[in-house]
Image 1 (cartoon, one colour):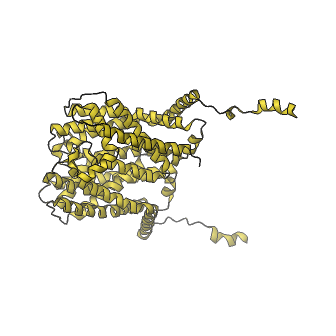
Image 2 (image 1 turned 45 degrees about the horizontal axis):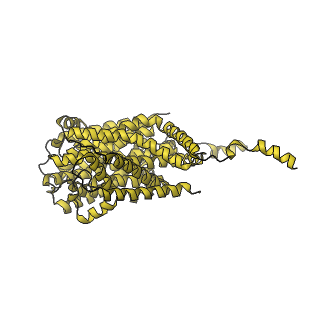
Length: 268
Length: 265
């Protein structure tokens, strides 16, 4: 009896039954999933790219039209606030939109069932989307600085500020898209967030324009801190204390990552 | 023997139905169809509409330390345009793109209803969604800024025309463009244009001259002009041209949409 099972077992183990783990397998999965994400988005990448740049550049020009006269302070606020506005839609609109589309098209469960670590899938999605968002953000900054004649002083804060902001946007956006299963509700939430960020958050106008109680709320939401840390990286002497803002962003990132991890690790 | 008995039941109606009562039946059926398919959304839609209106009216003031009266008047009389075109021009094409992606589009097109009746039914729905929100927006503006509103009876034809043109443009974008993804992108860009690149919420003088000139030939600024003319006194001159431009865009878009709908695949 034992003589028959042993040789049989050696042949019968299918290739996929061995659990692949470790850094190599994870990296392999990441690369595969990045190619998968890219292949998915490729027919539209050109269009998405152009729209991202148009939106970034568009916003930096548009806000100037709102004012009868753009004074230097307003100009500085617009030029250094618009990159933040260009980053928010990537995490809070593009990422949840992708998840919604996959759910509607019925490919969401298929992608989840691929033999790749889910953390690698999420990371791949993050990297591809961030790469798509960056040119628009940079273009928004350059056009804003040129149009309003603002001198930028790049500092070392910029890199951690942009990195943390991007990770925060994508992780909260992803977590939200995974927790709320209805694509229509997601669509509504993302639109409400865009509305809140574009009009009701002191990103391109001074916080002093807002009532005090409302400002307290914004200090806890991620958008105002995000604008402040990115502005701190672009200017000198405008934003003095970034520690509190970094802390708020960090807490939101942890929340987003925790939410994503919880949903990603769960079975139906 | 058996065939003779079956014949009366099996003969399909071969005559083409036409006439005004058939059209009206189709219209009311499509109206109920739209209301039923939007039923979950209708309440939500109303809320979104009101939020957009109230949001813009109140939010615009945050951009200023102290909002100048003229800016307040412009945003108060421009935001109603957003209410009127939101469903027809911006959300309508997205809804149609959604049914295309879900595969329900051909079914709706195959319904035995005259195209014009279906179009009229959709126009009615967009009107029903837009007007209450416009009223709420105007009341909010009155309470917040006390702008010098002088409402004239022209508000009725102006509203009807603006909704018509917005809805027809949306209809053309939704039906004349086959790829739903392109439709989505166009509406996304349009949201942007409506917000910041057409002089709806602020005077055209605040834009570069060439952009203001381009807007002279596009419908959005003129939509704002006809509404603004009906709500204020002396702020808008040469409103006749605005009516013409808006009407031409409406008719041209309607023609494009109906032509696209008549196309067989």
